[in-house]
Length: 633
Image 1 (tube, rainbow, N blue to C red):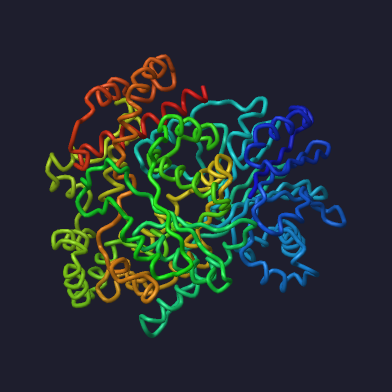
Image 2 (image 1 turned 120 degrees about the vertical axis):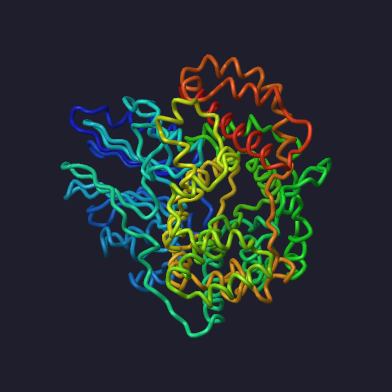
């Protein structure tokens, strides 16, 4: 897809031509196929294209309306082109780029055009007669958008990298966001790592006029209208149909299609849907599965599966047009990858070890000229939503017989223990302070830790926020699901990946229609018939083998994480001196604790929870942050 930018400078602001040139230079890596800017007195709009859709050959951005009343730039993939073509009565829509659809939608409906679109987009429209700059981001946040505002300048761009290239935009750290990121707790959705740069959250627009800047939400899945069917099977059938529609919309490509396939439900559902749809066209699908290195000894955390090849292979055997590729991360440098992602993403890469096997897969895909990779990353919050808060909701509503039957069935499938069932069923009657008192000191001390300096932990109330994120989740299951929606934001990572590899991730499980459906149905559907993640298990009858569909153990990504981390230790020991010289790193991280983790590298027990928490979660996150801070000082 693409990247975009827009600048609106006051009369005493920075020169618009040089600012536009700085943005173009910074955003060029995200749009190698076409870079075009238009400068209009004190306003400049920029488009930087990565062309992946067949209709991209008709792209002519920046786009002016015929009467010159509006100028648009857009990073867009519309998934309801046929519906829009009918509504807008477009002539020869097959010869129009998606941006042309979007401009026509703007001219018809104005800012309400976002209510008519399904897909991935971030766009900006300049209306000279109103002296207004309007920008919006798609519903699930598949495409990113950031902005900066000062007394003399308003600027927006797909990535923070572009805004930081502008003269006068300071690189001052947003300390609360840094602390939240490292602790893994929910930050303010409008924050970025820089005080001067704000993020446009998914489902939001930004309207800028001479009077000021307004950022407002236009969509949230909680507002979906309730859907009620008579039979459980109808919910499963409806989801299956929606998943096929969402997957088919994401198959538009000038290059072959691949998919990420674990042995789990979400990626399996997407791969199965794509295989069926591509098979009808006579096309093949390559499914890529990450596997541990050959020297991996098989040790794994309890309840997880370390090697997902066999489960993924069972899925592939159901579809004759699926080619299965197993990929491991041998030869990939963890620290080099962290630095590359930090430079392009405008933030430290989360789950950096996972980026290694993803890089290996994408390199293999690129060798096969694959341009689109399907995935199911949004699925945890949509098609396979799983939460035990439903138990507490049943208890509060007095549905005790139903609750007892559900718990009995879940325990029969080894989905949860009686202790867990009782805790979630009754937790609305147990205040947080009592939970703290009931937990032993050992349990409290085992809460996830960070390598933040002690004063940062106190200043940003990190321990309390971590405790709340685990033990004080919303009692309402729908709000619990909404919290997960608001935690996700894959946009920047998607664009950084495209710039690094040229391969585009697309995720049917994050489709607006699927989000609305999954928030509109009764929460009991996710535990119907005594199964957790029941909706997707029922929807995949006949599409996934029962060994995968009904399995309760989950795949463990990067089970061999300790190999690349151990290989990075010699360079890390050298770079510790660089970290100590960095004012930013020294102020944020407990470098003595970081040094101790490096020097006390364990020789075994990598599957143990305490080892995993310290040397994988804490250590890798800290070094990702350290390299990012050093690179942006």
